[in-house]
Amino acid sequence: MTFDPGGQNICGISIGVLSLESYFPKPPGHIKNPSSLPFTTTYEILHGITVPKLLNNPSSDMLVPILDAARRLESQGVRAITGSCGFLALFQKEIAEAVSVPVFVSSLLQVPLAYQMTRAPVGVVTASAALLTDNHIEGVGAQGIPIVVQGLEDTEEFASVILRNERDGMDLAKVKSEVLAAGLRLIDRAPDIGAIVLECTDLPPYAHDLQAALKRPVFDLTTLATMMHDVVLRRRYSGFQ
Image 1 (cartoon, rainbow, N blue to C red):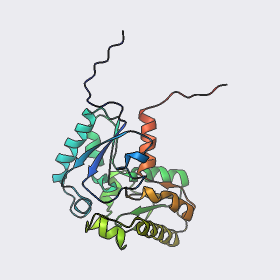
Image 2: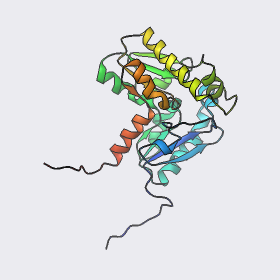
Image 3: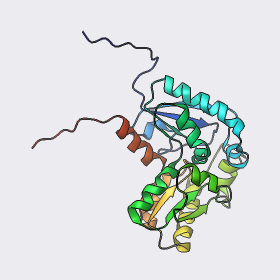
Image 4: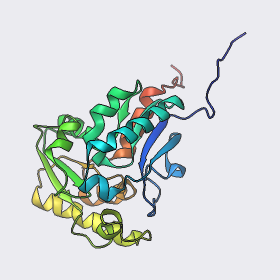
């Protein structure tokens, strides 16, 4: 007889998400829209930590609730932990040291991979180029890699809803056009870019359109989370020889 010790309220969850508090729409492709994701998820809401707060006023005071939330996710049986904002890169090292499961809280962790694959500058599309610092880059081990950054802080719809939290409703078609325009500006500025990494977790819903327009590999949090799911939950291959 096989004995399973139990101890978990809900089983079968692969990825736990440290979720900033936000109420704008999350279309398919967003890490906070599990209906579109190819892996199972659970969420710990970081109450009081919003996108504007994390981007504009990050502080060590945030670490306690973030680490507590990460430990709760681990206790629920998740196989790996991610986050709902790439700017959590500031705390990547601390979170990874606080739990025993793999942690990948920022899609920027893919910057070194993108560079090694292309040996060309990596384009980063971020919520705010002005607020993306060397500390964020160092947090994911990407210091020294040639990076060209394009921010969305000068947009109208994206910036007002996501960066300034002025309202919850959002014109998704307008955001899509703003993201595509930012991507085209990035390539216009640096045509030698070999791959694109989308820092912001609100951008994966537009990754397909960006790739069609820019003709380059596009990495985002969903690609990283899918890879991590496959890494921590390997499946037997089917087929024949």
